[in-house]
Length: 418
Image (cartoon, rainbow, N blue to C red):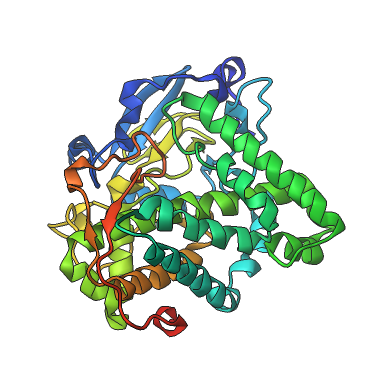
């Protein structure tokens, strides 16, 4: 476990305001990263970003450089606990903050819950949830907010059903998840919210130890109950929630924004043959997860010509890497004609998002069903007037007012099936 005297004295959970220079990778102008990010990538894809509490930070913005850092399983730790500070009550869990061999053991347990067969079996649930939410949209008059009325309810319901959370507890769980990705309040707000959701899930794991439910929590207890304790299982469930709720909601909202402004994107969303190409370009272009899990150097190393010392922190900008010129001369633009799809929106290596295929399924079902149900939907506000989440690790828009217009005359479950 990596430790520094600075981390012991201070700790990220005690930080109330982050220095402005460290916030640039989280800032955007609309859907686009700040121009400084591209300028920095072109000038030097690996840069010494500065120091905080005696710890040196490095920022990686190039595609190839980011790919190689994320692929390196030996030179870095992602265990953030030594940097939380003495006395921190937050026990960060889940795969993203766990190193081998524990990471290997836990991921081996979790991966069977996300096989192609399991995801395919879950498709009817996704179709039903999307259909029900579209019915609620259609029942409204005038302008709807696609963020609160569609983009967030759909993945939240999917995650709750996936985990097997009881219906009566879901509203409390929703409230706990609202602020954990926003860094405006520094470490206290983010890590405090993480602690609350973990405590909720820990209580649920303990309850299901006695009466396992039909979802992932119950399956893990039935299959691996004697191999995993309550804290570790709650950490895995928290990672599933983290990776599958806010991220999917942001992709649905921002993806809808692109589709509403681009007739060519809307056409692909209606076209079974072009839908997957649209989704991959939206994932690359939007890169809602702006930075990867921080990597803590386990040894002195040469990082593309830079001397990185043991204990230094390496931050990979996914939004920067996914706009790299290797995607073409128009890499800063959204293009329905882009052929290359090897983006890093789901990360890479041992910490690549385990639920990537579930996320793709959600987008396939939701985008196709929405454009077919509401072919005349239009944005009900100027795009320049929209308010986005500033300084959030997961980028999103606060609201998306849409006038739905006429609906199609037939909208059965067949229109959302794969």
